[in-house]
Length: 122
Image 1: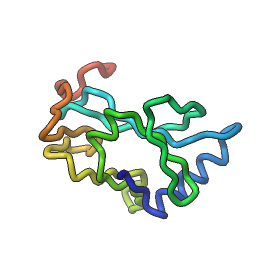
Image 2 (image 1 turned 180 degrees about the vertical axis):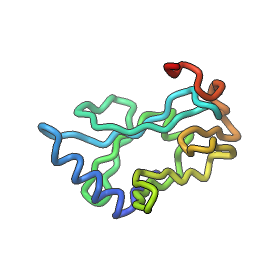
Image 3 (image 1 turned 60 degrees about the horizontal axis):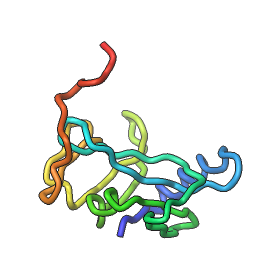
């Protein structure tokens, strides 16, 4: 199961209130990044037939099969520090992460690693 902390859910509720209509929080991973997969999240108003849908702290979370496989057991938190604020993913399946914490790989699926900065504008 992928869990949201109450602090993360509160921030998500604030962001959802700015969205028109009913939306879900979609967690996803894409192949790429310096370790093989990159985390992502956004709002979606569609649920696909193979998505898993859970509800936590009043937030409906939608996850596709690949993301579920590589993030099962993860916890999503929201942190505020003197240096900034943002969402943090604590993924027990990740065996390596990049310095920024947005890219990872698992033992079972290394993804498709790319050199840091590849595909980024110069």
